[in-house]
Length: 401
Image (cartoon, rainbow, N blue to C red):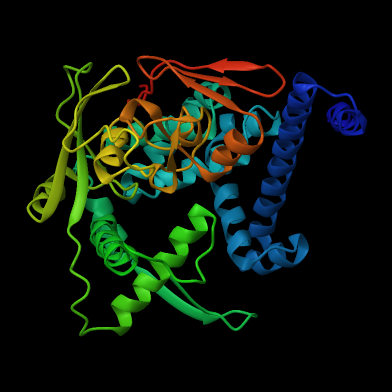
């Protein structure tokens, strides 16, 4: 561990470190952090044995919030049940986030099945070592579904019991609202908020609206929520219908049915989905090997407008779960559609020229010299300012088994 700390210091001190050296420093840093997380979990476990309320002591000693301290006790408990993952964490081969993924996955099951999932997770240690946290979480999600014999209805019932809302006034005098809902309610609320945003701000936005697209979205959503809660008589807004995209992958003939993609990233049991579909707007998108074979609406707008329309956003949802830059985990609905050939350079607002990217990567493309190219099947080639080229195949949606 001392050698790794030294390697990190050397990279930090170097004024000529290239990409490879910096990446090696990041790897060493990850290994050191993982070792520290393992030691922290071990100390927390010992404290739990002798203190009935260890969270307060953890928070005081670590200068953390009580919420963060409670999370650390959950991680510690998971590690005690997963010795192989615990060893991998201590060796720096995985991260604390991998352990937290196991904890989150176990909550999706009843008490009688959680132990079995945790046992499977521990046996997947090589999967955890080989992949990112997101990849490991997707594999855990697959294992969870294999253990569910109720089509997810028990989980939905637990989610409904866990519905919560709280309010508080922060140090700046702002009144805060935080809430969590089950996914069925969430889809309906999201539709109502989106409809209110469209009704109120289709023509213009408030002068107070931020320029950053993500902050702008949050700002408008807050105004929409306020209107929905305070104005019960307005006729300027209409109730929003739930909306989802039914994605059919023509390359997957064994696919049991369309994959439902909602405007928010949630999972809904199939039997509940059937009921929800009766009061929802459903769009079918057919894809094959990175190409949209069918999607309703006008998908090629040429130079008539710079902004993509809803039909184009729905169509690309059939190919992308989030930001199109490899390794980015930002959800699709937090992305904007970037023109591969820039609008200012004569690019068109046509489907083949659009790629979902998050605000961070959008800024890197426009201001930091990143160059993006798409092949005929949306194979992505990314050229960085230092000449490094990274390439991917067509966008894929299926989770590996």
